[in-house]
Length: 221
Image 1 (cartoon, rainbow, N blue to C red):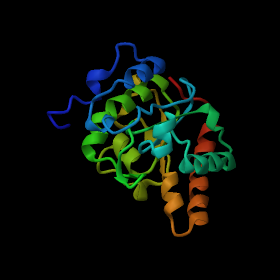
Image 2: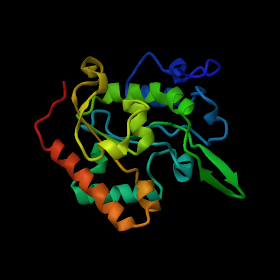
Image 3: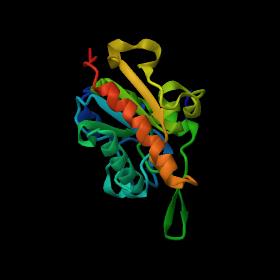
């Protein structure tokens, strides 16, 4: 359970659960302390009826300033990997498990800090609302934080990577529709890898599995 002194994002969700209404409401979220040092809420973006949803960890420095997900170095790597896999990013809805940038100051630099369990739990209502509004056919979990936010704290990307899993977890198809999910590396992990080209090739291979799933007849319900 979230810390009792944190309201969590649930207290800030609007009655209208359309993507546009959720985005507007999220700009005023005070569901955890991360909003205090962040420049702004970085909500998801993309078609509200996208067949594909990509979920990352949290916005980075450039995303925090721009107000859009995956626009920095990791976003550029993701764009290239999606293109090589045959996936149009413009047709995907892209978001993060946590909507505010978590960092520590180092001189003039802001250094990424992985969000803690409490931050992820506090922000989960936004992610759940996005997924319920979009009702995607395929969900891609980019990294451990996204995987745990969706499938629970015991989920391990290393154990399930590149494999199509039933979506949604728990079988709540009335709320989320039905489809498949796939976990893979976060693009920032690729950039940090000892062998960047090998890690990038692995990400592209996983995304090609996603491309194949998208070629199947639509499952939206």
